[in-house]
Structure formats: C-alpha cells, structure tokens
Image (cartoon, rainbow, N blue to C red; front, side):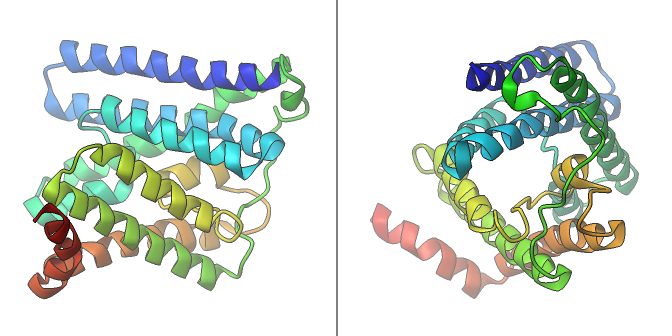
Amino acid sequence: MSIVVSVAAIVTQMAVSHVIRGFCTRMIDNELVKGCLVEMVAAAEMCGTCFELIIIADNYGVGAYAIFLFLMTIWWSNSWGSATACTYTLLEEYVETGSNPVHVLLKIIAQVIGAIVSFSWMKRLWMIEVAATHMGRGVDDCEADLKVPPIFGFLIEAVLTCACRLFSRTLGEHEPKFASSIDSFFATSMVILAFNSSGGYFNPVLATGLKWNCRGHTNAEHFVVYWTGSILGAMMALRIWTIPSLKAALVAPFKTKQE
C-alpha cells in the first residue's frame, strides 16, 4: 500500500507539472517570463518528486531508489522541453552562447524558488499520513546526506558532475539510439556511486530544495559542496570539451563502434 501511495504522489506531480508547463508554453508570449516559469515548475516537480523518492529509498532500499530515479530522469528529459531545473546548464549556455546574464540570474532565482516551495505541499501530504511510510515525516526537520568531510564532498560532486556532463555532451555529439535512456542510466549510476558519501546530487537546485539548512553541515558547507562543487565540475567539463585533443579522445569510442 505504501509504495502505491509513493508512486501516486510522484506520478501526480509529474502529470500536474506537465499540464502547467504546457499551459505556460502555449499562453505566455514573453520569452523571459515563460522561461522563468517553466524553470520554476520543473524545479518544483523535480524536488517534490525527489522528496517522495527519499521515502522510497529509506523504506525499500537503494535499488528501488535507482529504478525510480532512472525512470524519472527519462521522463524529465522528454517532458521538460527547454527547462533544465539546473543552475549550471544555464551558466554553460551563458559561457557558450553569451546569453543575457540578467535572464540567467532570473531563471536561477526561479529555479531556487520552485525548489524551496515544493516542500510545502509534500509536507501537507505527509502530515495526512495516508501511508505508514509517511508517519512522522511532515516536520521541518532533516538530516544532511553529506557523510564525508566537506572537502571530499566538494570533490565528489565536482568530479562526478564533470563526468556526467562530458558523457551527456558525448552522447549529444553522436545522438545514438536510446540516447536519453543511456544518459539517464549513466547519471543514475553516478548518483548511486555517491549515494553514501555526498548524496550524489550533482545539481545545486535539487540539493538546496532537499537539504538546505539540514543537520550535518552548515549552510556555508552546503554551498561549497553542492553549489561550488557541481558548478565547477560542469565548467571543467566545458573546458575539457573545448580542447580538440581531449574531445576527440572522448568521442573516439563512439566513432569506432559506428564504423
């Protein structure tokens, strides 16, 4: 029964967010307003569903968590359109295309707002205690996922974010069949790899929505690990990608398979 409630909570949020996102896309002409709103909706959906995903991980294990996360990331890649719910993708766009820095900042603020407000409806759902796994969860109290010293958490988030971004860029270069599924599988694997150390967030917005002000690290440590770490990792990946010899080395295995 409890797993059914968790699945229903996740699917409902995804469906509602999809409808709202479609409405915004069709009805709003101003591109900046539209961009900020779809980022806010995507961030709220991501964090709201991941709050419930924590329930699944705590009660059914990391394996169940991985399966759900894998399926959810596939859905997001096909449903979100231009939205990313991730700070460093906007920064990558700024670096690569010179997008308006004010627009980038406003979209990041929208992402953070969406992430933070997502707990408001999840808290109310948990307080109802429809499922046994929700009992006692509807409180403003949380434990940090950082189980290693902050410097190691910073390095883990940076290196694995870099790996995820390089893998995504390599897939994007060749667009193999089932690229989104392959990318989701790799990202999920990286999350599980870091699950018992930094938590494997690789996304400042997600980490902030779920773990800001939690016991186990200071807010300064949170910022260094989950904001500075993942953003630096993404920028490292971008730098590596612009070096022809390194880029060639990354894409070579795919070219060999195609040939």
